[in-house]
Amino acid sequence: MTTKTQAETLSFQAEVKQLLNIVVHSLYSNKEIFLRELVSNASDAADKLRFEGLSDGALYESDPDLKIKVSFDDKARTITISDNGIGMSREEVIENLGTIAKSGTREFLARLSGDQKKDAHLIGQFGVGFYSAFVIADKVTVITRRAGLTPEHGVKWESDGEGAYTIENVDKATRGTEIILHVKEGEDEFLNDWRLRSIIKKYSDHVSLPIMMHKLPDPDTKPEDTKETEWEAVNEATALWTLPKSKITDEQYKELYKHIAHDFEDPLVWSHNQVEGGSLDYISLLYIPARAPFDLWNRERQQGLKLYVQRVFIMDQVEHFMPNYLRFVRGIVDTNALPLNISREILQDNPTMTKLRAALVKRVLDMLEKLAKDTPEKYAEFWEQFGNVVKEGPAEDFANRAKVAKLLRFSSTHTDSAVQNISLDDYISRMKPEQKKIYYVTAETFAAAKASPHLEIFRKNKIEVLLLSDRIDEWLVNHLSEYEGKTLQSVAKGDLNLDEITSEDPAEKEQHKQAEEKAKQDFDSVIKQVKTVLGDSVKDVRLSHRLTDSPACLVSDDNDMGLQLQRLLKASGQEVAEIKPIFELNPENPLVLKLKDQTDDERFKELTHILFDQAVLTEGGQLKDPATFVQRINKLLLTL
Ligand code: ADP
Image (cartoon, helix red, strand yellow):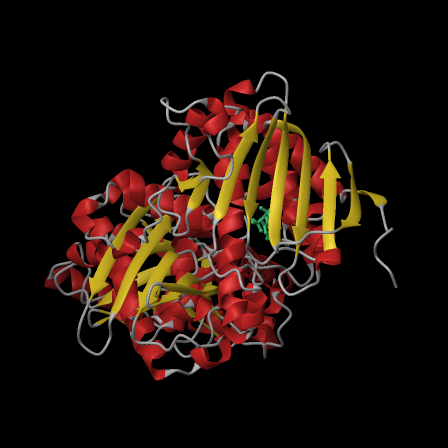
């Protein structure tokens, strides 16, 4: 098949059209970043060539000096950015420039509000890359050829960014990509040597490959003497992370972050470490973004760090460096401890890699601990964005369980606020002298957790309880059974036995005990009757020591799975053997007293069912037979 004549006009995928429109409108106040984005893409293309070139040297086509060239023509009103990186084949051009392959794009677009300021933030998280060209150009031409293909496999792509593009095959002698921006009327400021140089300096100084522009004419030479072809590097082109920390400004750290993370916003914090000598020689520059990316919860999301070996870029998105619960960390690892020809497969079970990973994880955890200590307000921002990811930590990273646990933040009855800002250390510092456990309640929502009847006895005795209502929390407490020698205990499980920590004096305690004994005798037959009525629906029925106001509640046995976890597992489609709850009645509650005095068997039954169903509802559970529940309540209402 000859590809030569194949010229076609194709339409953009619907999402691209939508995105283009939003990009152009939301970036109008920050137009100059188009150059950063295109330079970043060119530098990524060079990285890709380096990577593929490791196994196939022929891809260099005897042109080993990777670089980016930026030029402009004020008469033709064009700016051209060209690279000799990997280039694209025809299929790749269609795939990369005509569609958005990122999963979750549709959901992302649906979140945009039409408010340009807010959308600009979101767009920044999404990363607009190539499409930012249309912010200053009314037509963009891309001429590209993939490294290793013959010259006639060049491709020309052109679009006005309105909805369609044309694509045709052209000859291209050199590999790589040339992007020609046809500058819009009114954007003439960019057709200026000084302006372009200063944008490159500002955003791309640290890009480790030279960005060349035409040499400025010497004022002493006559115009006809200047040679068009003289180029000079505009950027420093040093690998920033290899410089001594004292030589690097905050601005430079931030710009490097934006370049590697394709983020528009400054990072929240970073940690730069140079470990030389010893068996594990490495430099790491690790960043925590200020904002969670739009696809943080997408399992297929690309993540990971950039790997350099002996200053040479090896590969991108190396996910083996970070466990899943730290998947938001971005940055660079440069090491002398791995061979240059390392492949992704080898990385997986390379012993050096394992050591590096352990060291890097520790760096991140230390950085977060320091952030929490030094700037709690910044840590609060971090927690809001990434807290739910970090909560996966104790289950995933056994070795660092205690360190991760220290970073966790919760809501608790201490403030009753939905803001999660209480650490386990805070909790421990407020524990009663005799208290040995860290208490928590889990529920479907924060409101349900806060109002849980299980808290009554704790509130009365001023014992703090953590209020857990994020989906991940059940999973978390299942894997974090203790912290600093204190067991984590659900208030809805087992026989609480709070006697030791309640504030009663011995005389009161004795009185209390006698009252309990008496209640036990008084209610003996009621409990038996309730058991008969509820039959198979419960594991046991007993009097409660945790309720002060509510009539009844459900609890589970110490070793049984909590009710909330059962519900979550069922919701996720898993088979869960049904674990029956224990039904507890509050002997001081008027309704329960009424039950005790009930002589009519039928009404006893009705009331028992209602109390049981109510207990299921307050747990956030679902009734097996809601209609009958409503009928029973209505019947009762009629007797008012
Ligand atoms: P992103 O860079 O976030 O993936 P872009 O829209 O900027 O998104 O680019 C889309 C894709 O087009 C890139 O992932 C890359 O595969 C390809 N691409 C863009 N610019 C170049 C270039 N200069 N050389 C080779 N491929 C490129």
